[in-house]
Length: 342
Ligand code: DAH
Image (cartoon, rainbow, N blue to C red; front, top):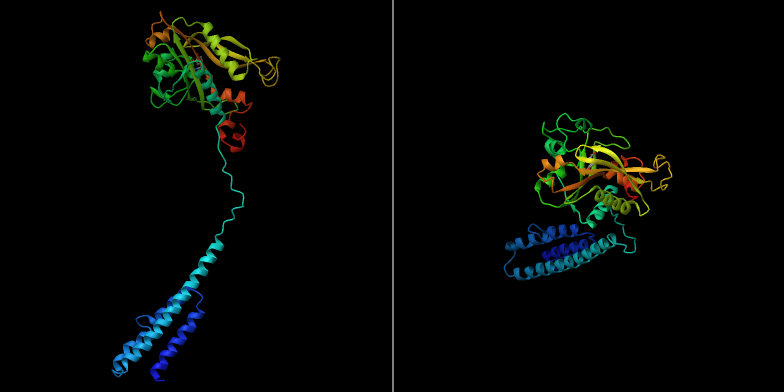
């Protein structure tokens, strides 16, 4: 065997031995470069062809090519084996145990305020009322003046709020929506208007600087106090149960005349008196009255032809009563453990 043939054989055997031992694809690739690459050992032999006698060249070329093919075939076969092993390991590592119980998705749900509001809306929509809204940032004009509360009126002190300018404020009540709807002049009116209101109040169990009211307004021909009482009684019975009784106490609101507050018989003790109703037997739930003729006038409604009634309910108050929650702050803290109960 010629020296050249021996060298080719040696390179080839060394390479094949290393390929057999290669345990990852990188090692295999390095081997390919060191033997078959541009500067590889076998390639170097081919480059040295010019020093070989011309008649020897085809033979040497043949040896080199045979060696090259054998090495390439071995590299390919080993590569395939390594790739298969790698994939098998990956599949094993990423195996999903389909028998594991699925992570449950926790569903959120409605806030007690929202549940109470939807209940009130359902009752009034059932009686043919529209649900409207008004702006939270309101003109003094609508929040006070058009509701018969002129500058200097003591009601303005009781309902202090955040003033953006002298004339623009965060509304203290939903009543300005009454004026806005009446002004549009589309009669008759039968609407409720829920919304957020703001007052300069300290936070405690029954107060918050921001809370919600639901306003109600009916304007038509021949509307009387009897309509007001009948409507609000139906509302109370639907909200708290058919056994509930109502009572109206005279009160004063600047934009209604006469005005009243409506109480419902305590739904805990049935009116006998208990801790829940502070031994009164009755629980106050809203303010109401016949729309003041001067308010009708200011809002462009003919007070000779039309009359109407209005009412205002505190939404939090309804939610607290319905769910027997004794501290309003719980409604705003948004502790999920608390909210989950409703
Ligand atoms: N806006 C009144 C308040 O915040 C509540 C109210 C009382 C509204 C009587 C009315 C009403 O519509 O007729 O204290």
